Image (cartoon, rainbow, N blue to C red; front, side):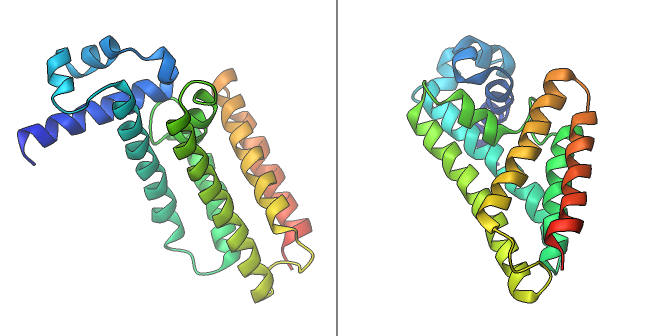
Length: 197
């Protein structure tokens, strides 16, 4: 990697952490300069403005989230295994976040609602992609006979995501991971009693 590319990567990585912790509005160009030890010109050699940095930082964070999911889910063969792995990956975000500050997808989605429509669109697309993936796995499980045929896939995917993301938020806000433990226990019991054939 050439020096210019390496500098760009440092800007993206450091900015990803800052945006994830403090939000778009809570992170200034000075914060990025301090984190990267670069002057304004050093940053603007690679990006035209803070918006471009935020979008590149989100893309970087999203790739890290997807990588965590792929590493775990690629090992699984059945829809049941994949559903369990989705829970485990969300749980891992509580104990070992891909980017410091919580889940970058949902942080960006909430943070950008009123302030950054392009970033919000990217975050919403990421949320919808994950939601759709869970729906597909639930449908596959119904077709293979692993899951009960009456399972409502879209509703259940929403329940999964909102329960796990809510638990991440509570665990982070209260600085107690027990909220994630409770959510995981609830979802596993729910799957055993209501989903699995």
